[in-house]
Length: 424
Image (cartoon, rainbow, N blue to C red; front, side):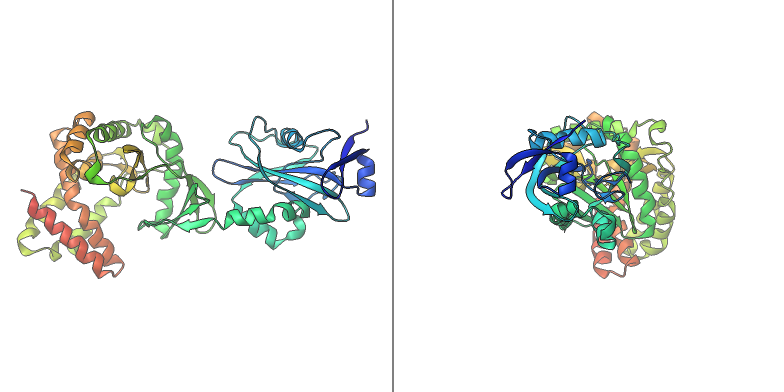
């Protein structure tokens, strides 16, 4: 059966037709499409062409596409080829541009698009031998490492677009102690661990949150492990800005109270096999504080500090799923309402009252009262929450001692003394 191809002139306008065999034999100028398919985490679908392809057989490619048929609009051709090669249908094609490409094997006007797909990919066995999802920087590195392994037309037409996307990275202003954080293309958050011991926590987070997110009443990140050395973890940026504590309302308190109640009631089967475990690191850290922090307290507060640590050693034996670092930098608001909770690196099985520490004892009364009522906190939980709140600045002292940062030691110690003196 003859396959008619739409021919194009030097200006990129339709100019007659010819059968596909003649187009290839005489290398006539025609039109073709290229669609870069990205998943919800921004990775690109990379594939290898079969060894039977008439152009660039066996090479790797990062766009799906093909020849525009006679009388066919390029966008329609792109949608058709996407369905045929990868089984992707019903998506929106965003135009990237139109440009000419020519070599000894092919000569065409390339109509380039991009789209997002989060479903299954079904490879057409006659044309696609293998496929996988790759981060953009890995793709660029692979092309630079071995250009001959890749289709030159896609690299020429879309290489600039690809590299521009890779360059869209900037450090997030608020950097945590555990991870280095970047905003990617204004849409995704990438985190890499600052220390090897952080990797298991990030790995467990990537396994837990996709299961947990659908049941929680506020938005949370849904991270994916991207691999690499050190490993990188990506999630779509959760909308909102960090809360201003003085602006928290009673409605915000009810929303967080409901969120924490659902979180702390999470059944064990949801977090099982995620790698999440008991917060066993807490007990050694509390023991270390006895020797490291208590001696730095004023003499009249050392007994109170030691008693605080003893109470929290008992509290740390509980095994409820909790966030572990509920504070103003990890709560997000949108249009004046609490809408999201981020940074789950400290999530573990432990004392749920840790999540009540700042939320109840460091916030406006209207917010705290509404949270306590909605959550249904017991007097014992509130007392443990107060103790965890008293301990908050001690972590900064430990961080300063571990990283030779006198400013952190002084700041944390001042906060610890202030809280202990203010508590009966």
